[in-house]
Image (cartoon, rainbow, N blue to C red; front, side, top):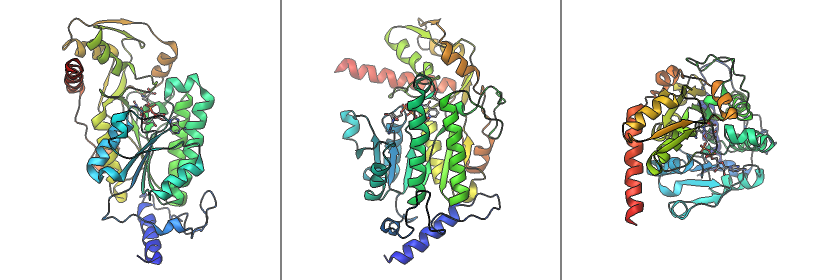
Length: 373
Ligand SMILES: NC(=O)C1=CN([C@@H]2O[C@H](COP(=O)(O)OP(=O)(O)OC[C@H]3O[C@@H](n4cnc5c(N)ncnc54)[C@H](O)[C@@H]3O)[C@@H](O)[C@H]2O)C=CC1
Ligand SMILES: CC(=O)[C@H](N)C(=O)O
């Protein structure tokens, strides 16, 4: 296909994707001839563009954490196994390595990341690499590097190569001065963790690149995510996953948050479906580029009661971790996601009883398989 045709299609896609509904005219980065990293506008990789009739070519960064493997599985079902590349700086387990393309990608290595995007003709990027709230407080310099410097690399590469970019944000992007019950999309955001600060920065930088350069940036603020077949990576909401494993294994669970700490939560299938849905939504449907999504809110006490319906002998004790408790006390209790529901039809499937039943049927069948082997 002639390069000229591809470039003009890319420009028209950029113009379409910049439909922010705010009436501001956008000058896409390629039209002003200089990208954020001063890459020449006629560099050869610009001749590769993604047609609407093709499947996207997907890269997931930080893909070996709690959410990335599930996301790859979902996207591979939709777009084909070889169109979705999982990446991380860790070594994948055998089952992950053999389930589809995997590549080493350190988001702090700009050239390495750019080479991967170019050589694999990536068109959509899901940027999952991060240090979460609790581990971030334990290593602020690393969290700042991964969550902020890493994001800058990803944004520049996405803008240069006309990628559609998804970056997750979090309930942790709010702080003690935000309205907490409910928390709307637009309100004061003064988080007091490096994780929260870096996520507000990501929201603002992504939106800035969208308005300034026409980058097709899309962002959802996830609640705490609960999954059966992957472990959380060091957050404040981790207790809500651990309780299921401990209930099955020992019948005893020690919770590191107070019994009445209410936080928004979501089952992983809802979270990953929302992520695909917002990426597939037509640009003109998106009145914003960063949306809250919500499913349920509960306290450790309420979760324990629901779990005890399945494991009546479960004993729950509380040994509060001051760092996590202070973080949780500054986060939303309930999330207002009316804009996501209105703009692109977001709807959750799992509430608390359904979540708990699903977790036990997954873990139950899993442990039966383990016992049989
Ligand atoms: N799991 C949850 O409850 C929530 C997650 N999110 C966001 O979703 C995204 C994915 O979350 P999880 O999978 O839970 O995170 P996780 O902590 O389980 O995984 C993060 C991954 O990033 C990788 N990573 C660290 N440094 C890296 C580097 N320099 N280059 C490349 N990769 C690097 C780690 O090896 C790890 O596999 C994160 O951005 C997180 O902030 C948002 C809200 C809730
Ligand atoms: C809600 C999140 O972003 C994460 N699970 C954390 O607790 O840090």
